[in-house]
Image 1 (cartoon, rainbow, N blue to C red):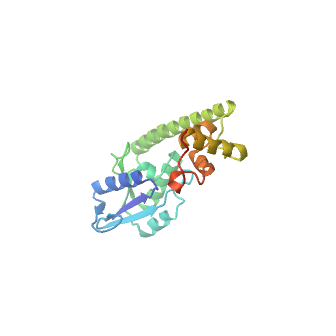
Image 2 (spheres, rainbow, N blue to C red):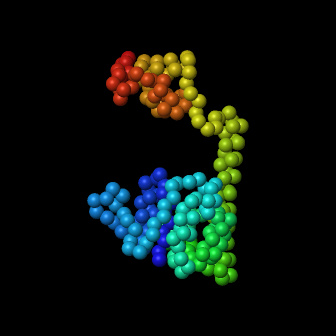
Image 3 (cartoon, rainbow, N blue to C red):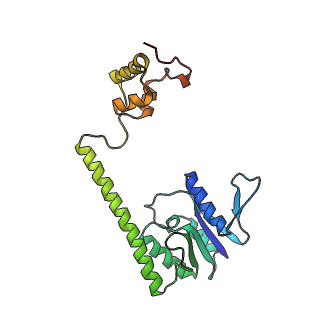
Length: 220
C-alpha cells in the first residue's frame, strides 16, 4: 500500500509544488468540479498535517499515530520533499528508526535523496550518505542563523529597531496627517520618513484616505 504524507502550508506556491510532484508520481489525481482539484489515487492513503514550526520534532504530530494504525510491513511512505517530513539530522534518524520498527519503506520524490528506493534501509551506504547530506544542510541553516543574529546585533548597535516598527502617537500623528494633506506625501513616503510601517501610517490617516471614502490631499 502507498501512504502519502502531505504537510499543508499556508503558502499557495508550496501547496502547488507538493501537488505537482505527487501528481507526476501518480499518487494524486486531478478531479473536476471539486474545490481542491485533487484526490488520492486508487490504493493511496493520504495523511495531512497543518503547517508547523520547524522546532516541533517530526514524530510529535498526531498524524504519525494514525499512519502507524493503518500501515503494514512492506508499505511505502512517500513525501514530496524531505523537509516536508523532517528538518534536521535528529529528525531523519528518528524517522528512519520509526519506519524500521514498522517495516515501512521511506521514499522521497524530489531533492538530493530522491534516488533512494528506501531511505529507511539499514545498510551502511544509505546511512552514510544520509548523514552527509543532512549534515551539510544543517550546516547551511546554522550559518544562515548566525548571519541573521549578527545582522540584528549590528542593527541594534546602530540604533535601528528590532521587531515590529513603533506606533505613531500624539504630535507625530498630526505631522503625518499634515504631510499627507498639505504636501501630498504618499503612504510609502510617510512610512519611510517616520520609520514605521505603512499600516501605522494608514491608521494615523484614518478618515483621510480615498479608499475610505474621504477627501484626497489638498493641492497647493
